Amino acid sequence: MAEKGGTIVIKKYANRRLYNTGTSTYVTLEDLSNMVKRDEDFVVQDAKTGADITHSVLTQIIFELENQTGNAMLPIPFLRQLIAYYGDQMQMFVPSYLEQSMKAFQSRQEQLREEFTSAMGDPVQLMSVGQKAMEEQARRNMEMFTKAMSMFNPFAAGPAAGIDAMEVDGGQESQSGNDLSEMKRQIAAMQEKLDKLGSS
Image (cartoon, rainbow, N blue to C red; front, side, top):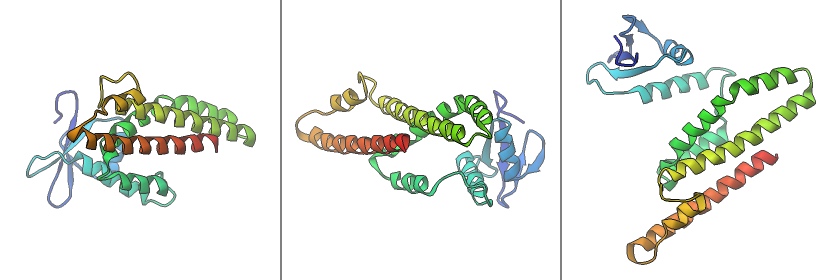
């Protein structure tokens, strides 16, 4: 049973078993992981309440994959930074930033595969390709972050103007100005990190 658009419904029961209503079979987290890799769209619902628990299940899949020997993909500094953003002013921007950044990377993955394949066997060229890819991704990441920021200020002409335009004098707005100043400081710090990444 699939929803409109071909979305498959996965039911999760109290005993933690997952049931694929499309194939009428029980599945595992590994099966769901393979469905993601095959670009099969699905939602996971609590069998009792009907609540959408897709986010928590996908997070659990990542946790399982990260714990497999030699399979870790998320570096410790990234995990620390991600944790630090919870409850921070910047938290609202992070999901859009990460989503846009991953889309940009995904759009270039075939080109990157070809470049790395052609550079295999030549260590110098391989390092050059890797450096170029990191620099390009750092640049694209900043563009994605700027785009994510602009979504929250559609009247802005640009990233700097977007922040400045929101700063107004007087009363309650003064506190907002202070918050935005801190936000600009954090953006500048992030830009510095990205620049260092690109030049390292």
